[in-house]
Amino acid sequence: MSEKKIKVTDKRLFTPEGELRNEYRHLEEETPGESNSAASPPTREPEPGPVEEQIDTPSEVETPPAETEHGSPTFFDLVGVVAQPIALYLGDAKMPNGETVENLELARLYIDLLEILKKKSEGNLTSEEKGFVSDLLYQLRLRYVEKSG
Image (cartoon, rainbow, N blue to C red):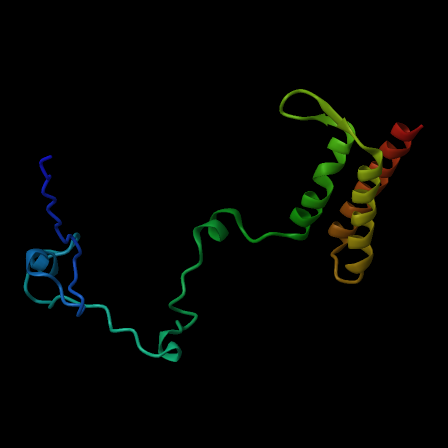
C-alpha cells in the first residue's frame, strides 16, 4: 500500500512568541482604511497584563448592538413574557401545527404569577405600568371565568 504524504502548513499570523510571521509583515505596513504614508508606525496590541490592568474604563466599553437596537427590557416586556402563555393555555391561541392546547390550571398559574409580580412591584411602578398590569389581570381573569364555566 502506498503512503500518502501529508503536508502541514502553519497558517497562524503570529509565532508562539507573539511576533508577526515574516509572510504577514505586509499587513503590519498598511491596514485597510490607511494611506501609504509612513507618518504613523504600525501599532501593536499591548501584551496582556494582570487582570487589574485589563479592566476597561466605562468610556472604553461599547454597548452591545442588541441594547442599542431594541433598547433595554422594560417592565412591560417582563409582563409580556409572563402573560404570553396564558392565551395558549386558555385555548385562544393555536400551536404552530394548528392545534389548541387548553389547560386551565396552567392558565390560572400564570395569572397568579402576574398577580404576584404586581404585588411585589407595588410602589415601584409608574401609573401607566400599574394601570397596564391591573387592566391585563382584569381581562385575563374575565376570560378565565368565561372558559371555566
